Image 1 (cartoon, rainbow, N blue to C red):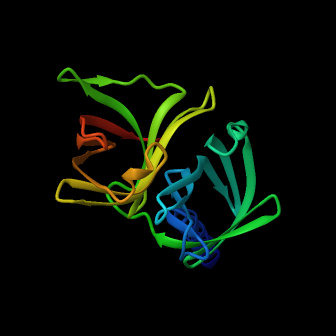
Image 2: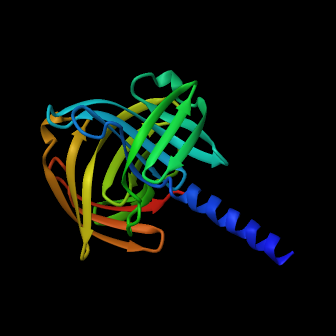
Amino acid sequence: MKALISAALLLLSQYSFAQQNLNGAWKLAPANGEPQTVRIIEDNYFMQTHFDEKGKQFISTHGGKLETSGSGLKETIEFHTADKEKVGTVNDCSYKLDNNQLVITCNGEATTWQRVDEGKAPLAGAWRITARENGGSMVPMRPGPRKTLKILSGTRFQWAAINTETKEFFGTGGGTYTFENGKYTENITFFSRDNSRVGASLAFDGKVDGKQWHHSGKSSKGDPISEIWSRIE
């Protein structure tokens, strides 16, 4: 009996590890060359973007909630720049994870992804902006269908401003980041609103306090900002 229990616990442990191991950043294989496609998975959420970094061209992005069960994977789309009518739809897919290679099959079409990182970092996760400084005071933002989200793996980030009710998309940007000694730095590899910003670096002060991330500095336009982001649950 003890042997059976131990075997069951081992299988459960392996299953849980496989589920958690989807977290992180992935590149659509082949991983070299331009344009490229990057997908970030964290906290049961994903964002996927197709862009040409060298040509400074944003092409498309989509994302939403993600659930896994066994080898099944379900995506509930919350934004989609190529076809906004896909917002609210569900993709029932399957996946296979083999070391640093992830194969996702949807509607009979398989895509192969190479791991970029494992999503292990203090800021790794999915965040939603919940307060912004205005007139010297931090003003809470009411939760609703219009929201700004940011997802971070161990090395990559992406933000998206969306409205899940009207299916509107307001903008996105992303790239690589570092977070050391309270200093958060973004290196932009795509920006839907202004392709000329690609290649720029933005530095902010950052502090994680429980499930909140305090973020201050200057925006891409040079305006001072002070924000609070909360983990999506």
